[in-house]
Length: 325
Image 1 (cartoon, one colour):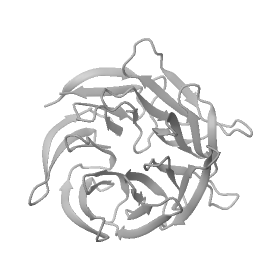
Image 2: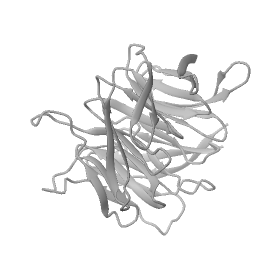
Image 3: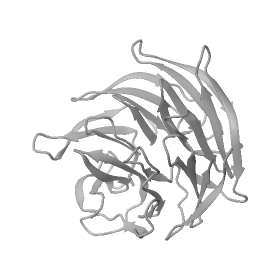
Image 4: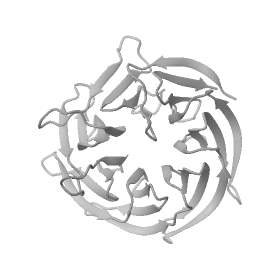
């Protein structure tokens, strides 16, 4: 189904972080414009389309005294029709202008005592120029655009007792998961985040989540993938499919919106593709797997909306392996 494509070379190796590969898919009609992989306090950015554009190695520092931060997650999105690079780290939330990397907005997102380490983790971009970010205290913050065109703080909510692991959204619906395995569903409004459902833990961390056509796809530290059906109007969530997908921690989940393919990558060195089929009953079928021998995979993303191309990042390696149909 897939075959190995080109191998991309990073400036520095990938850190052992879940969801440690992001893609810049700002033009949905084409292949991802770039990918990013985190190395400590730096972000490796590799162009995917133009050979004339060089790779970037971007430091993330605290503006006050320029010490290096620990980056946890990266996201590209549009804010007020401008492409932005959004970074979650031990500094908090930072929003950069995409090309010149000028800092447009920052917030510490800190709810820890003064002498305690803190970090932001989990990013989402609901429609309406909103940004949601989680942190190690289990708090989620909502930011939006003010009347003057600058980003402003809107709301702060805590529904988790453990550090936020990942966020995802579909229209005005937001989902958050944490290191204890709990998932919370929210509605995003112009004034606040409204919690309306909670999915109990299955005994291991929930590391990565995505939404697709009324389904929430979640990857767990136990190696399971679980699909939950979301009934937004009835405010109900139910477990629909459970897959024993990997032998070790799942470190990233992605869904191709046009095809319903699921990409799962794991510490067990396997990248796997699954097909969601929706009918009278929702089913998940295994379609493809590839092993990167003796390597721990820490990130994976589809690079097209159809899922015809994907890439995986490898812990302590400066290589990103691409696969194509």
